[in-house]
Length: 62
Image (cartoon, rainbow, N blue to C red):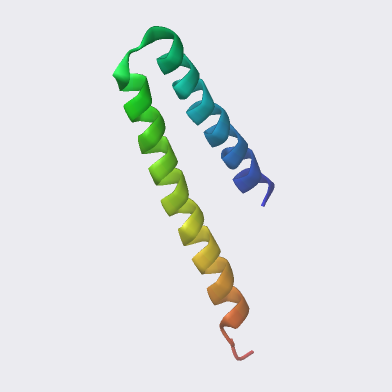
């Protein structure tokens, strides 16, 4: 779980850095990169949450 939290922090920092570099340079490539990272991060988070819900709901006979 700590690895997922670390990846989330790194993702947030990368998105923020991309927006900051775009604001300073005006190069739209950094803006596109930030949006792409945000989109993939949301998809990844939804997949992780779905797996956690399935783990809670699933009844696995022992």
